[in-house]
Image (cartoon, rainbow, N blue to C red; front, top):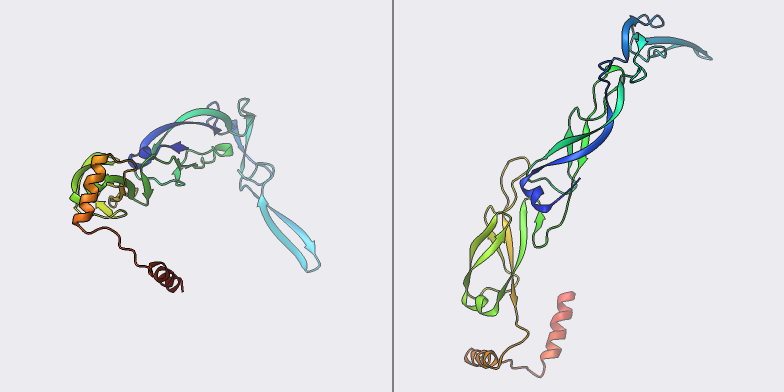
Length: 252
């Protein structure tokens, strides 16, 4: 079953179509009417076979082939299910997806599998979950990850920004002087644990965006800012040699 990212975060109900063997309604899964004890195994459902080997005579127990190990036989075979007690049906089912389910999780629905023959209990139904990726959110365990862009002025001066979360927008204070790549945490804005233990956080990675086009006024202001803070690069003539030396020392 494929579900959306937010459906996995908050849980949902999905309708599925299942084709499976179900108990025959006509004979209530018994295979017919007029039950009698199997004359071959005397009702035990097991027969004992003896066979001779070079080491002597051995006995082996096996299910009775006459009654298929049931110990009983049906006199009047059900025409609907041909005596096996189950028929193939297609029906719709509602599957409840718990909040916090992971991509690749398998849900077990007890007793919703195929009915056994001759009234034996039904098996289980297993639903494997696939979660579609989200456009802006990523998930690791119960934590949500988001990359959020800010301008140079916001990074330098600080700001209060609105951050999207899986529950809606929240305000976050960006401190002045923040560097690109800094990760900030929004406490308990992640996903509820599928077992109900806790709730994850949202981790916001700040990306400082450099403008690609500047007006003449913007360029002048930035130049004045650089001059005031002595940010003009003074390239030493041995800078490249020093860079190579540091780089290869680092690799070693």
